[in-house]
Amino acid sequence: MDDLIKRCQQGDVDAFGILVERYGAKAIRTAYLITGRRDMAEDIAQEAFIQCYREIKQLRNPEMFQPWFYRILSRLSWRHTAKEKGQVSLEALADSDQKLLVDDPDLAAAVEAKLKQSAVQEAIGRLNAPLRTTIVLYYFNELSIKEIAQVLGCREGTIKSRLHNARKQLARELQQNGLEPSSQEEREYLGQQDGVQQPRKEWEANAI
Image (cartoon, rainbow, N blue to C red; front, side, top):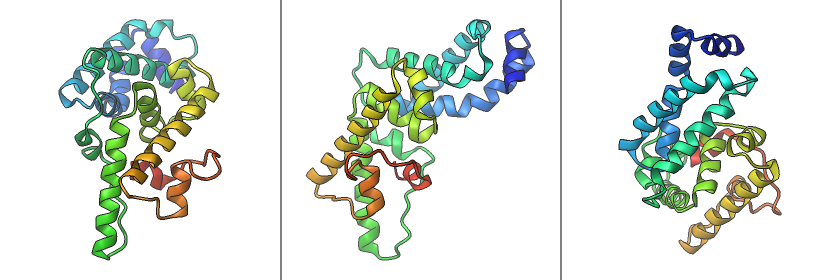
C-alpha cells in the first residue's frame, strides 16, 4: 500500500486508478451514510478523489493515507449538507449492505428484531454530524479509535466519548419506543454495561 501511495505521489495515473478502485465503493457508501443523499454520494466521492489527486503529494507519511483521505471525504460530506441541516435517512442505512441478523425462526422474534433495527437506524439518522460520522467510520469503515481521531482532528478520548454518547442516545430512544435491549450483547453495544466501552464485534456492524 505504501508503494502504491508513493507511486501516486509521483504522478503515476495508473497507480491512482488502482487507488480509486480500492476505495471507490467505500467512499460512495461513506458519503451516502453521512449525508443520507444518494444523489450526492457519487459526486462527493468524485470530488474527494479529485482533491486527493491534487494534494496527495503533500501527504508526508504514506501510512496515513486512509485517515487523511477520510478526513477529506468527511469534510466534503459535511459541507454539502451544512445548509440543509439534513439527517441520514432511514433509506440510507437500510439500503446499505448490512444484513439484519434474525436467526430465530419464530415470527414474533423476527418482527421484534426488525422493529428494533428500524428504530436504531432512525435514531442514528437523528445524531448530530460529529456523532453520526464517528459511528459510520467506526462500524461501517472499521477504523480504529486512533484513526478516527486523526480523521476528525480531535483526541482519542473525544472519539470514545462520542461513541459512548451515541450508544446512550440509541439506547434511550429504543427505551422510549418500548424496545428494550433483549440480550447481554445488545446492552453492551448500546453502552449499558457500566459505562465501559465494549470491544467491537462482527455482529455490531451488521446490526446497525
